[in-house]
Amino acid sequence: RKEVEQDPGPFNVPEGATVAFNCTYSNSASQSFFWYRQDCRKEPKLLMSVYSSGNEDGRFTAQLNRASQYISLLIRDSKLSDSATYLCVVNDYKLSFGAGTTVTVRA
Amino acid sequence: GAGVSQSPSNKVTEKGKDVELRCDPISGHTALYWYRQSLGQGLEFLIYFQGNSAPDKSGLPSDRFSAERTGGSVSTLTIQRTQQEDSAVYLCASSSPRLADTQYFGPGTRLTVL
Image (cartoon, chains in turn orange, yellow):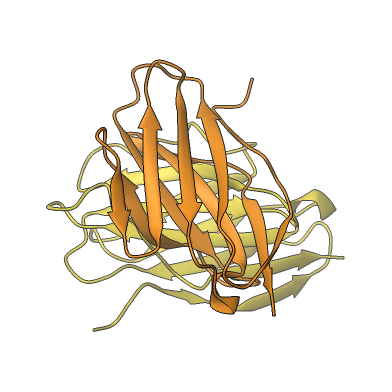
C-alpha cells in the first residue's frame, strides 16, 4: 500500500463551483500534513498546512480526519487560476507525496 | 530573496553516461532533500541531508545513485551509468531549522536519457 494515496481526478469544474477531494495516508502515527500545489512543469509550492481542527485560507479549507486517516481539501468559488495539480503531503521526518489530484477550472 | 536553484535546467544524455545535478539551497537552510518525479507521477523521495548528520539514503533506487553535500550547502546528485528509466525531473528542496515542515523547491532538472 502506498504511504499517501489520492484520487487522481481530473476534476473539471466551471468557474465559481466548489470542488473537494481527499487523500488517505497509511501511517497512523503521522503528525503533520500539508497540501502543495504544482502547476504544469513547475515545482511544487506549499498551499497550506492541515491542522487537526481544520483550517481555512481564503477560499481553501483543509480538514484532517485522524480516525479514518484522510485529509481533504475544498476549494470554494473556483477561479481559472486554481487549475493545477494538488499534492497531499504527509511529514514523517521526510515528506511523502501523493501522486496528485488534477483540477481544471473552465470558464 | 533567492530561492533554491538547480542546474542544469535540462540535461539530455546517452544511456550509460554519468550525470551530475546540482542544487543550491536557500541560505541558512540546514535540511536538503532530493526527489524524483517521473512523467505523470508523484514525487519520489531520494535522499535527505540534515546539518552534519549522516544522510538518509533510504530512497535511492540503486547504487548508481549517490549524493553529496559539501560544507552544509551545495549538493550534487550523481547518477552513474544512466538508464532510460532514470529519465525524470529531479527536484531539490530545502527547509529551515525553524520551519522544518515547510520545504521550498527548486525548479528542477529535467533529465532525459536516450
